[in-house]
Each structure stands twice: as structure tokens, then as C-alpha cells.
Image (cartoon, rainbow, N blue to C red; front, side, top):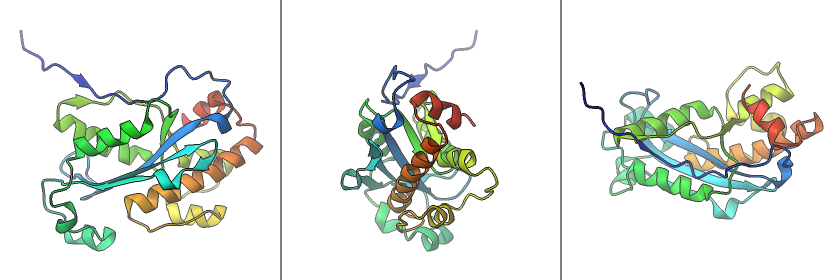
Length: 214
């Protein structure tokens, strides 16, 4: 009989048992973004920056945003430095990915309904891969992708570019290809999208979950 390594489950630290009838404007969300050494995060690419900000009562709590560089334990390709501005000096002595992810879940604080991101599947894969390297599993915490909200509002839109969506919806744009800048841009876009969704009948946590499931 083969021995199996014990699985360590990493806590999502999200609120539990939120009534589905809870109005969206009474919920709290944690919006986050990552920057990585490349796009193959399922294998060899690593997180080099993580940032997050909360939305509470449809207000972005910008002053409480968190951001950290992360030591990836590997070389940062030149094209990634050109894109993000993140150099070896930024990550030298920086926290590990595991420590940064712990800070993210601490920010969620057991009060956030879910994690939100723009094309969040990529960021979730990056985080799960980092946790797997530490023999931890993140058991599918509740997430909402702004792309699903956009699909609900304007199904004809077919692009992923965060800045273009922010321009289309008239929301704030921060520094691109910076985890903090993209997290803030996503948060303000998300608030605007949630207002549009409410105008179309999405008024409760249950409604939002259904949209988030695509």
C-alpha cells in the first residue's frame, strides 16, 4: 500500500453562511491582483508581486490597500522587468509567496464574501501553484471575475484588457502591470459594474453568485 502525503488545507478566511438574500451593497469583498515571472504559473513561473484592496458597502477602501513584492527564488526575465518595472532589487529580501498569500487571507479577515479579480482564474492558478509547492491546498474559495460581471451587462464585449474596460465604463485607471495599480483599477471597475448589475436585477448575494458562476 502506497503512503500518501497528508494534505494541508490553506484557509480562505472568507465569511461563512452569508444569507443569499443579503443585499450586494451590504457585502464586503477583497479584490486582488498578482504579477508573475511569466504566464506558465502552473509549472515554473512564480509570483513576484501581490496587492489587494477591500470593497465595503460598494466603496473602495483605497487607504487600506496592501502591496508586497515577493522573492520568487528564480530569475526575473528581462521582458517581465520591462513590462512591470519589477527588478531583482525589488524582490531581494522580499517575503515568500506563502507569506504574502497569508497576508491576503488575513486582509479578507473572515468578513469578505469572496475574492474578486479581473481574469481571476490566472491569479488563482498562480496562488494555488505557490501553495502546492509548500504542500498546501486552497479548496476553491468563492471568487467573482469582473469578466463575468461584464458578460452579464454587455454580452457582446469580447476582450480581456482591464484598461479598455475601465475606459469604457468611465472608472479610474492606475498604473498598469503593477499588482497594486491593477487591483485598484479592478476594484473601482467592479463597483461600477455592480451598480450596473443592480440596475439589471442583481441585488443580492445569491444573484451575484449566479452571475459569478457564468
